[in-house]
Image: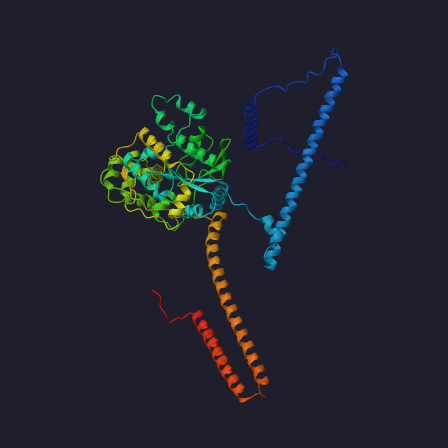
Length: 569
């Protein structure tokens, strides 16, 4: 019988499946056309090769082949290097993981080598890095400029920093630079200059906030009619400060390094830019822009060191932390920003704040912020006032150079405990104070100032405590104190040893006298009675002397002892 043939499967498809396939194909073609359109329909350039008629054709082809081989070898070498780096990283990770597992299992402390390998470098934005960089600037500088905001000079002073520098025991000098003097009334500025110059040499300064470099020229060339650059680009007090430092450099007969220190937003980097007349340091309204020490050469004999800000102690008041701490207002919570703004407003005159911001009467800080947010159009969805962002904006204005406010100097000036007349004279030594006063007067007369009515009266919270790590400067200060105490202890020990030596000598003399008496007794036993009488008289006399010496010794011991019953007033 014939084997029946197998029936072939039909190639017919259902309409649904066929239309689906066609649709997918159309989509694929569309995607390919779109990608080709993005790439551009450029045909690849053909290699023209070397024509046969060209001279030295073989040499050219050989060079091309050699070049191609070199490129291939370079690619292979780079590939091998990458593989080696990956191997090294893999091995290091494996070692670290093994060390961690071993520590977890054994529960022992990590070895010194593993600690050295796994020790993390502090991040640039961390407070530890700010401490270490500030310490470097103080140690490296011969003259330290403490920059103060003229609106609140007392709040910008750090007693820990001043004590560390004044008690360092070397030739380190401390000067005060009163910056932003154009934001306070003239009478208030003169009062502060007279107050501060009694402690340290003080320089009045107004830095240029906008440097005329390429970026600012291009930016303001279109807006020249609307923006007055004369007020922002002019600098006052730079010549006075430079002359003062150059004269000190001549007296020292060596090149000096000048370090600028201070709290955030007082204008340290702006002063360097103003003296250099160029934008060499990064400046801005944000706090803590300078994160490491930056060296700027002014001339052959002088360098300036820009430093990160002093870190305020968290134990300070809310007002002090609001204006002087290194906080990022974009990260901090809304409650903290509102509390900070509340502390600022509580230390100001309410009527002046209402007139300055053109706002009606308000009961509390939240109402003030809502009114100001509605006026400036800072609203969230549904017309809800954005209190958080308006509080951040106001804090930036108060720490920046937008708002004019001033604080009064203390009525009865008391020197800090770390400042004495000798220390003040030592800090003022080497500077021409009369010439400095004349230059300050010239700077004060040359500027335009806000009227006292337009400037807000601000109540300062006093000096701001800073967190400064123990460094060599502070160590030297403590050495001077320990030296005095050690000298006193040495003198006391020397006196005690002298007393003990004298007592021992007297005791030896008494022993020798007693031995002599015994010898005379033995020798004179066979002699006459008269001699016995005389010897007895001598013995009595010598016995009285010994008792007297013993009683004297006893009184000396009693004198040396301390009587706890006596009260010294």
